[in-house]
Image 1 (cartoon, rainbow, N blue to C red):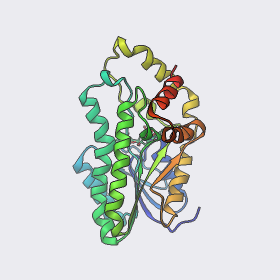
Image 2 (cartoon, helix red, strand yellow; image 1 turned 180 degrees about the vertical axis):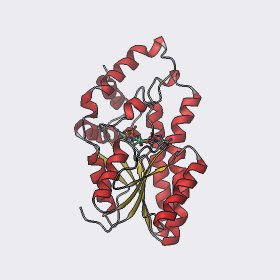
Image 3 (cartoon, protein in one colour; image 1 turned 180 degrees about the horizontal axis):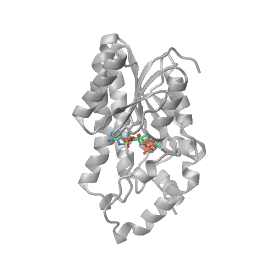
Image 4 (cartoon, helix red, strand yellow; image 1 turned 90 degrees about the horizontal axis):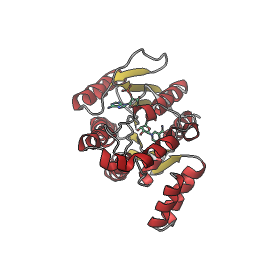
Length: 267
Ligand SMILES: NC(=O)c1ccc[n+]([C@@H]2O[C@H](COP(=O)([O-])OP(=O)(O)OC[C@H]3O[C@@H](n4cnc5c(N)ncnc54)[C@H](OP(=O)(O)O)[C@@H]3O)[C@@H](O)[C@H]2O)c1
């Protein structure tokens, strides 16, 4: 797909969806800066900059480095994030803080670092990678749904605040893609007997290959499409089959009916 070459910062470019985005955009002529908390070796066609979204000085330093090297940032893809699993009663406040720090406050830190430059140039696009899970509270992934729903609302509000400066903001909700998110999820230190059966069943379903069978490059294709669109929509989804149907059902069905349908999936 053709779009004018842009300077793109993709947080979390070392793995999964972020890596697929970096690879596709770099292949198609964009100047791409991915990030990693510990960049190992440099990819051949894009740069990996050190960045931890939970650390304000690291964010400032990384954005400063990109601005120094490229002079501008046209597109920010807030992709870095972590999953979390566990019954809500089994997860402590530290774990809740950790997921909100990485998945909500992290993107906020990066937006704040990038926005002054975008305002000065009078243009920019921010794509926040949320999740289909933002649309509903999923059992044993409640804190993940909550964090991604928070990022959705953040994205909506930011869009209204920065549109007058020529900056476009949207969210992209992936369904389930084949990445390292499962092994990187924050986990409860102890699984209580009360929730063990439901939790183990949910994890069994989650880790089944069926659920992570799609190529993350599909998300990268959508990012490229958003970048080439003059006026992006507020929300994009990259999902298949039942996953996208579930979003429509959530909107149409009474709340308790929807809960019953979700629980039936987990039986
Ligand atoms: N895979 C899916 O099915 C799916 C579905 C919906 C939404 N998502 C979202 O897609 C995004 C990417 O996830 P993924 O599936 O590609 O997972 P992944 O393979 O685990 O990749 C996560 C990326 O985020 C980076 N990262 C993690 N914590 C970070 C931190 N504190 N600071 C900076 N970077 C950090 C990692 O980089 P380093 O470890 O190198 O620092 C890595 O590049 C996440 O926001 C996730 O919630 C994924």
